[in-house]
Image (cartoon, rainbow, N blue to C red; front, side, top):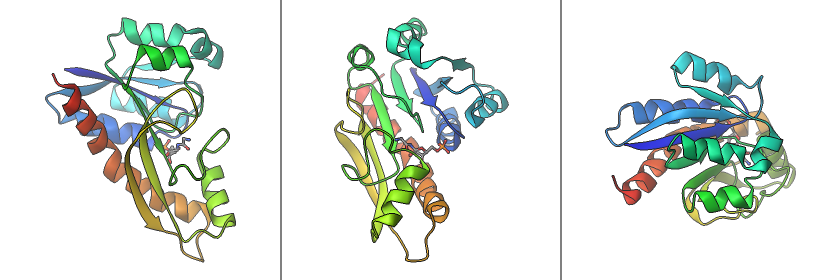
Length: 190
Ligand code: GAR
């Protein structure tokens, strides 16, 4: 059984989708929801879903104690779902091609430090883009730069607000992220 840790900083709707999707799987399970924001909605979701949560600070992430905890818990795959911090190089090296991220835009556009959540949708609309979408990718030591696994596009309409665009993007994320994680797991093998 592949043991997945999901790391999130916000509401956790993607984290919840991942937990529910892999409850129906014989090969993988989300066994831990990690979070760097004690008041984030994902902590409540973890409790409601009955998945252990793991709260940590930015300095614990940078010091290496988070990756040590995940290794101690025999985590095979780390899935970022609205996680806002940079994954340090030593963490990336501890989980080679075993960390996946989802970004709410068509990278390489609208990525990098500070480009998360509503900031991304505000920038896309301010630039007058006609399309946006999602990017699912491996994580390396730089923000939003790892090898792509999947991009899916959607329209941006003239009347869109950051909120309406975020809603459309969330639907795409929920529809695609668990299956892409599943395909990475299938490639890892039992
Ligand atoms: C998602 O849209 C995800 O793509 C984005 O944060 C949102 C989290 O939503 N991630 C980033 O911006 C990473 N740079 P959720 O908490 O409802 O899953």
